[in-house]
Image (cartoon, rainbow, N blue to C red):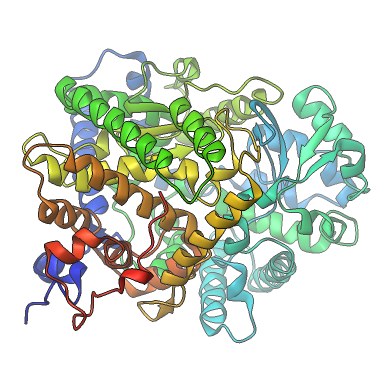
Length: 631
């Protein structure tokens, strides 16, 4: 029986597609984003295979080195012959460490070599000065997807931990550990992980990243971990002692002596050894590659590992992703499409400006400051103008093997990451390759970025109506603009720095509206899991603002069709996922489930009810007083 769109708009538009859509065996889902990504994956795999065969080989030096690296990654015969030999000396080195103090004397070396070291620091822009990169103190990752999985009554957490343990035990056996050694290593690693989970932020907590800014003077920070020689470590890594560090994981670092001390060494050492065994599996035998992915496949319910061909491509493409993206964009993204999308972005920003100025629930002072921020947004469409210079240094040594070349590439990447410390932020660099089906807003650079890959059907096409394009890519463009004014982005100014540009009364009014969005989503069902309205609020606010602005922009065009606009929005979010994956995503993803991104959002717009004749007796009905519009 066909679902009435008045009762479930998402199903009414997508159920015919869903009835025949098949989730690939090596994927957790299929749908609008995923189908397009799969098409691009097929293209890139075919192209890489052609290059390997000597057909239409590009003369670009970076791509030539990718082809060499891809050849090494694809040589499974050699990989199987070498086996685990490259990792055994590393394991022996870590096993020989006799104390925490001895380990700390080698941390900086391990870091520069890209070896496991449990030194969770990074370099990123300062929230208070977005033009400068500073040191941040993060924390270790967890085995389970979120701290909530460690609750005593979370049966799925216990089940997953056992799956992880079984998978690691099988893997460790490949490195010649005895059953007794494996049991001891895993007991200690799980104990270490459980202790970490007590202090690290939950996904809900970390989603409010404005609250994560805790700057420490370096001397004060080092007092939190007296047995960890941070001065010596960072003098070796950075060449000098930092003056400050930003500590988003403040709770963890206030207990960090429980992790970085001689007393904690037995658990830390076990954790390091297990990490070393798992760190290099992508470069070893195919059996080990497949085995190492067992836990992640269990998390998402994916039955089959990636094929050898796909695994080799993704391994080789990772260091060269921007170069491959540029190749893709120049091959597949027309100048006409680029010009048309740039015009749509300009239109959307103009629409947004009018909507901000007309937001009469805000004082004029706040509205004008919001427009200043809007006017400063820099759009990047399609692809970057040029490759970062460091890509030309990624030269493959054909006389060395996969493992050795991977080590050099890894060290180059790490050296680059640390070289950014205390330097100006590079505002020209993209954080996604052009062949990735995605888009983003960077609050610290006040930029919106739309890779070429997303600028095609179902999101966008020169062959479909303007209304359909605005309901697709228009909504995505305005979504990213809306991130400048969501529950996180709203706290940053036009320069990307943390700055309270709101009046207290206006911010209170904004919070009241965002709370209404939280309430619309919180507790809704998604494959048996409950949606967390607070975790997903920033993305939901961006969807709401994006739809509102895109709808107004669509109305400016001749031949406007609200029906085509809303149907396009429902089409781009069509999704068919494995239940295990969706249950996990409910606890880790800051985006709401696809169906709710359609049904909950469209019911905030009067045009939806009039266009589809939705009445009070229909399930999609929402009373006018309960409809929320922010921007």
